[in-house]
Image 1 (cartoon, rainbow, N blue to C red):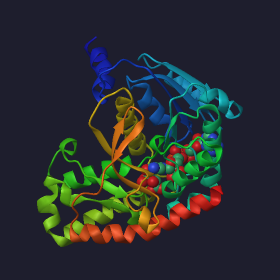
Image 2 (cartoon, rainbow, N blue to C red; image 1 turned 120 degrees about the vertical axis):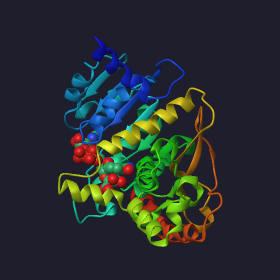
Image 3 (cartoon, protein in one colour; image 1 turned 30 degrees about the vertical axis):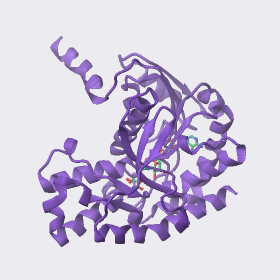
Image 4 (spheres, rainbow, N blue to C red; image 1 turned 90 degrees about the vertical axis):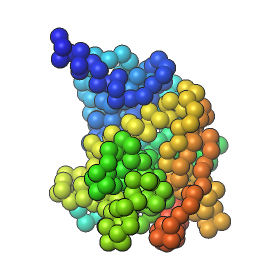
Amino acid sequence: MLARTALRAIPRRAFSTSAPRQTKVAVLGAGGGIGQPLSLLLKMDPLVSSLSLYDIRGAPGVAADISHVDVAGEVNGYPADKLEDALKGVEVVVIPAGVPRKPGMTRDDLFNTNASIVRDLAAAVSKTAPKAHILVISNPVNSTVPIVASVLEKAGTFDPARLFGVTTLDVVRASRFLSSLAGTDPKDTHVTVVGGHSGVTIVPLLSQTPQAKSVIANKETYEKLVNRIQYGGDEVVKAKDGAGSATLSMAFAAAKFTNSLLRALKGEKGIVVPSFVKSPLFEKEGVEFFSSNIELGPNGVAKIHGLGELSAEEQELVKAALPELQKNIEKGVKFAA
Ligand SMILES: NC(=O)C1=CN([C@@H]2O[C@H](COP(=O)(O)OP(=O)(O)OC[C@H]3O[C@@H](n4cnc5c(N)ncnc54)[C@H](O)[C@@H]3O)[C@@H](O)[C@H]2O)C=CC1
Ligand SMILES: O=C([O-])CC(=O)C(=O)O
């Protein structure tokens, strides 16, 4: 009896909430390496009242499986030809559909396959759930988010406050990697990561984290840490040795970001997290999407924060990120046109 009570306590502690379950969330790509654990974590989020799981393969099975978990909330699975049904009445759509990397590939190498997957899913969301908040996980995020924006723009349904590239895994990694060096608890070690989601476009602002002070004082340690945060994805791709990329830590990160958004949608104030959104910060430099701290509100993006004070090294990192970001964004926009 004691063990059962302890198990029941896990979902309550894993997610923050002050309101009852009330939001319908869809996962597109729910049968995949990220989709399955993400769907389970969302089922355990008290703010999710109904889960709609869609994939071209296997979603009804995943839904049947997850629906046996003894927490409240409905779960439905939809096969390949039922995308519209899956999206009916949905307020938040999370998209992890698409192929992952193998060793030796860059995220941009996924473009040829994933661009059209994301484009077609965005068109379906625009048609059936035009007011939904869209959270894009599929890589290359620097290009897939602009693709979604372009598709919605053409359809007349684009609201920049409701489109997010999920870069939370970079934030999670930065916190974890820094904590292991600084001997701190990741729970209290927050790192703002800005830019985009690949290699040099990932820019951790470690100078703004008090716990990083002694770690970044050593140039070699600092450079190694920045590199590890920028190429953390490669570590997992290499270790999985052809079996894909990060799935479990990504599912964790996406569930965390989704929970932040759901809390803000329900009226909780003061939720500020990084996300890759349509942003004015570097528009003049020709970079229309950028990840920085975003204040979330009842309609999605409430305020886009600036970068704050940067060290000389961070200024250089941002400078190096911009041309690559611009290229990735343009590629997405051109594809969608
Ligand atoms: N944003 C981020 O930080 C991260 C992004 N990713 C990206 O997430 C994506 C998914 O990765 P995994 O789950 O490991 O791949 P996976 O191959 O295990 O799963 C992808 C799923 O998408 C489904 N799918 C393909 N086309 C679809 C369509 N048109 N509609 C619905 N579902 C479709 C597949 O059937 C499969 O079940 C990849 O592009 C990967 O690079 C991965 C880790 C981190
Ligand atoms: O590295 C990859 O391809 C998957 C990914 O985006 C990450 O783990 O950050």
